[in-house]
Image 1 (tube, helix red, strand yellow):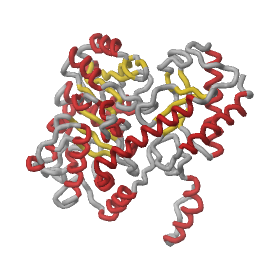
Image 2 (cartoon, rainbow, N blue to C red; image 1 turned 120 degrees about the vertical axis):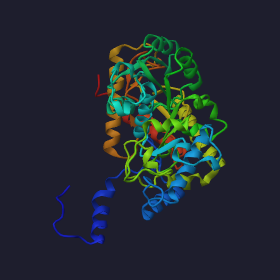
Image 3 (cartoon, rainbow, N blue to C red; image 1 turned 180 degrees about the vertical axis):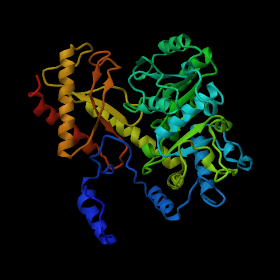
Image 4 (cartoon, rainbow, N blue to C red; image 1 turned 135 degrees about the vertical axis):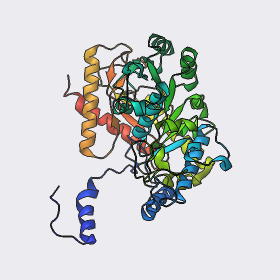
Length: 455
């Protein structure tokens, strides 16, 4: 880091400085050895869309003069996403305002989830947006314990209702439905929303949306139901995978993140709603810029000036349904192949059944055998070794796998224990089975080298 230059510098010098000092330290998610997070973001059509969006400098806060054609590209993208999930779309001829579209494009899943919580708040207590929160106790939100995404709790604080997350125990990384039912009954009248994860952010296990819907609606049909499908969107692409999200269109809102599952470069998310008119409850108006039928500035909370994010996805969707299905099926197949390789290895233990593209696993020291009720000291040692493995991996920079805390929800080692596994992601088309075998050998060698230091 250095101070702001006093004199101007020619572009060639700036580029040379970037190439020499910044670029070598950037991550490269397109590398077949980067196996731990997100997407490659390098679909050629999507990259072209990103460049064209920069060059054309459209602002989707307004339509008539800021984005005469870009607005309608965004409308098309939102309709396509709704169609993929199974939400009903009105005929094109009936789209006369942004209130008929049923969604919004945002910069990321956190913003989309925050907007969903605003919708839930207004559904629970209309006009809170204008009159303020008067009874905080009615804005509880049910989330699954240990696997919920931070964005929901953060959103509750941002929209002024306070951190009122009600955590419900899970089994196999899905709601324990009996406990969910008890929680909804116990807190009846105090719940504004129930959150389900179609692909949680740790194991990408897909909740059973229809079962959650049926449990909640049978007790209180007024509760807002929201699905975080930032990862699970990929299941909508393929007839082979669509059963995983059965019932998702019964939910009031769904967050999806194309930048996580469609090789779209950062950033691009969308919030979709079952009833398009519900977006009016969180609208904003100004006689300066937003009183037009097609001004998306009215329906994107937290966002004013807004670049043409959707063009990247509009271009990528040229792959069509067949291309999207192939993308999804290849990733899930690759995750299952990696899981099979893990299962063949005596020192590595898989912690869940892969639904989508993620496989979390743990290295076991040579003197510890996997049993469903290991003592606390063994769990501590397993975690310490795996955290050391991840730290060494980062230092060496040859491979990358993600790491985070994870409840042992399948009781592989000890029910209720918190583990620190490594996670493989199958999102990179360049990653081959040879790479999978190599990273398994790499982790095994690191674990063997490091476990002796931890007793």
